[in-house]
Image (cartoon, rainbow, N blue to C red; front, side):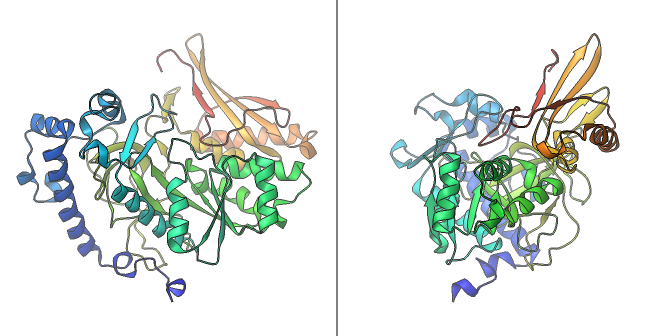
Length: 443
């Protein structure tokens, strides 16, 4: 029976690495030729670089191909054929699905998909869910607004594909979602880490212990939090459930997943994606483990608007150890560490918001929400960190504050102005949180 299988696709998930590389190269040649022949945008980009499909014979040749950034996609959309512009590779009547990016980094980018592309999305997500222990017996609650950005749309269809039950909670508010989970005894759900913690807080205020509910498996996306050990621990303790991470994007697809072995990183779904890691300073492709860089990714099977050598800005590194789950897909150590455009210099030191999150979420007595503001006082950079004390720790600020300062200094090599706020006063988010603000004029 399929429900007893360990892997969704036993052949591809355990195939020898050299065979996966051969498959990736053949798929890349195919999608590159497809885009070259059918997309005005891609053909112009490659002709300017002097590269044709016949030139692609090895992975070294792939590295010569120019990368694509989100800003380039914004520049071509809304042209004919409206609204997608010159990157569209299929007749407009073949587009079956519209999505757009969330807009957290600027003007949203529109993403068309054919029905075949959408089936590909669901298949990618089926790998994720199966690796995280979802089975046909699960009843999966989806507490997200079914909006124009992709969020967990493909996760919905993958739940159906693996034979599990979907409970859509789109138009319900948080309290109603919690009551529906309680009523139907849902066993799993998907949400951003911010919303997972926010739901737990709302449940407690309703007099419901989230640990008493039937949720035993949670898949997160949209933020790095589920790969940050302190944040993962908070979520797991709040719900008495296993929390799994996943990274994907509207313009890329569902490219990675954490498995039940939880090896401290994410598998790259190498059957469907080619991931390269590029040194942020030099542009050199990093092959060896232990060196961080930004991810350059190609979706090898997506046809309506191809994703070929897309500069995702996600900061990652290869893990040298294989996963004990038996999958041969390579691991990204620690998951996505942040974004290259979020890592900024403050007082000459590189600062990643993820490091601050790890500290805040690791100190007992601090609430789940926080906010970081970088500005200048004269010519000097200043970092203000706003946190909340949970009610039962309201009188213990004198013990918590020095520990918070010490941990921040240890993790980030920087000093902070600390502000302690009343519980529930900092902004709350249902989707991607915007906790980091750089107000310096040069940024």
